[in-house]
Image (tube, rainbow, N blue to C red):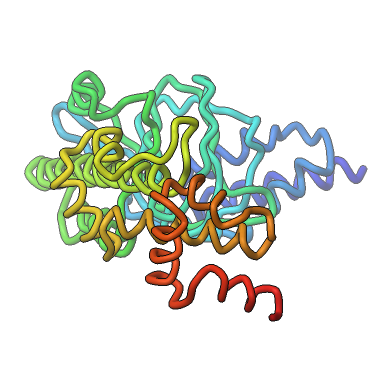
Length: 328
């Protein structure tokens, strides 16, 4: 008897959700929860719907002669769902992370962590799953769409299943850009629909450019990370000079030196000197090396050169540092 009562409750709750939230998302939850009244866990998963809120930006789909913007809006406090329950949407979709953290996984074997500022590109035929981790929630914007223009974006490589997650910031700016696509426009006539679709396509191109710029900026800074690593560590063949490091990271030395100093406030040589003396301090404190051994290991000409450099950096000689370090 209780199964029948529960089935009735589920049915009432589903249609309540369907009226209150976007129909497509409610249907997605319905499918994900595998509603056949099989077990209590499925019932409890549906109950999670009560905790999140939806703001639909479209009363109906926006259609031009070629393309269609089917759904758009915002979801807040979206609960976590089963990452193993992949679905095929049958349309393109953009999911923009406003806040929270989560995951994305797809049938191509990608398993990616998501954070605020990430944009997930969903492909019509690609089975996928995404959402906040179980026990957490997130806020998102979404658009669901189809048409030849979007197929062209895929053919041209702007939409790429091998790169399904972009990152664009600041979040507040892009939140407004998403909302501006449909704001203040009568999309029920052909001219209004074309304007909305034009703004939407413009948004996608700007998102792609922002993601590419962010990726390029990250790539540009990789030389700095690698340069610091090479300068701060002794290789099997000794210490790399700043000139050697510039060649390793693919920059001419003058440009490397100027950009390094601009980013960190010290020259590559000064940075390396500081890292060597840091190592010397640690070795002296541990009592593991003599001064002559340290001078050789850190590539100083002799003990005098090592002692002079040590004092320049630390304001005391190695002997004075050892005495202080050991409580003398």
